[in-house]
Length: 125
Image 1 (tube, rainbow, N blue to C red):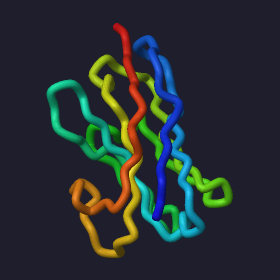
Image 2 (image 1 turned 90 degrees about the vertical axis):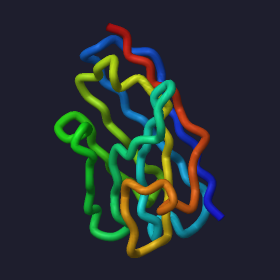
Image 3 (image 1 turned 60 degrees about the vertical axis):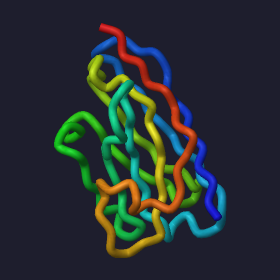
Image 4 (image 1 turned 180 degrees about the vertical axis):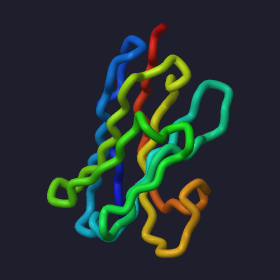
């Protein structure tokens, strides 16, 4: 069982930066691939970024390339999402996810075994 708790969201002006954190419970954190999704008002969940359990391999949605950076610290059981040059369209609830699967599609919600409760990011223009 893994519990995920996000933090770091808030209200920020366009052009600013945020670093979201996701603290995971459990002893097998390093064996989980981790992802970040977001959900804007009235829209479905959107995959943002992922980091593989081994080797630190990362992947990003096209909308996230260049401004988003995902990283993990296995010693701290934490995954991060750095967002730079924030835009109003980045406003959403950001969710941390975890999967123990080896073969999966990053963008599918069903790929993930665990979800956090989300953290709100609001970007003002």
